[in-house]
Amino acid sequence: MGAMQAQDFNMAKWAIAIRLNSYTEQEIEEAFNRGDFLRTHIMRPTWHFVSSEDIRWLLKLTGGRIQSAWKYAKDLKIEEQELMKCYRLLEHTIYSN
Image (cartoon, rainbow, N blue to C red):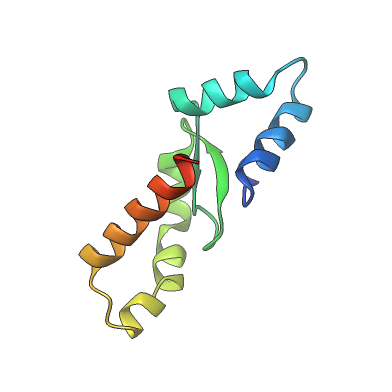
């Protein structure tokens, strides 16, 4: 598997677990927290799980396309610093629930 779409975090963890023999949700969560796999926008502006071992070559392969897909932030004249602040707030909100 190169990447798996991971829009809904809990359902995406379930999708990984059913593809593996005898893994629990807790074990999948622990693997994610260790950084064994990452949740990122590797293919398009939607969430995907990818192996941490594969992230570098995948970013080289898809990075230009993803950056051009996020041009709407430039069109809205949103500075990168403000955009990153929004991402951190969203991350905190999502993972603190």
